Image (tube, rainbow, N blue to C red; front, side, top):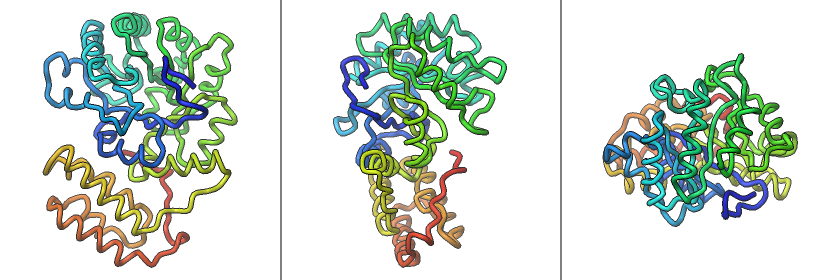
Length: 340
């Protein structure tokens, strides 16, 4: 699979862009476990052109995480074009346009999945950005706005005509948000459309090695993108690669390995964001590293409320002491219903 001149090999695995999740500390861990491509958090075009410090910081990429993409969102062509030019200066491997985020405060302004209600604007914006930058441009979107407007097969051709280099499709409508099951049949129709020439990346409900293999085998996508199932579980990329390459199911991480990983994540989060923000923004990960442990409520509450770093580390050590004796069958690593 290729995006522009970027060669990604066969069946690459992408870390989906997620706000307040895919920061450099989390991207570090996902790359360690085999993610082939990572994305920044959502970068607001208006924030960039107005010199917002938070938006600017999201543009920073590091050598360890390449290939990496910067994802932009917005609803005005001029702002998005200017933001794309600014993003290009950060030298990403490609620039991704977010036409899929379903969150109300974004979609209701016409950005993200809100673009699915104004296809002419989406296409005009995409073409303008492709012409404005030399860096490859890709798009991430959904099947359509609602069940009555699943337009992705036709839309994919139209987006291809604007000059994008790849298309990622989440198998839900905007109306669905993250509810129900992702419909991969329409993703497959896009991929198997003989008029499509660009790579198609499938996204939605990839939760383990088996669902990943099924997505490749059944629908023929060029790559898969994994989102919610990575939260508190960055090793899912190794799980999938081991299964695809060797047919083997990766041995679950031990409690001690998870504790060590949580400590490393905490260290990297603070290194990147400082205190207390680095602590606040890692909480969702810390509790999910240990999802499924029995009688865990009291410790979980500590992990999501403590601010003192040394107290958090002590709490993590307590997890090793109290649960380190559990074997694999006593850890219920079911991430199927995780919602971030």
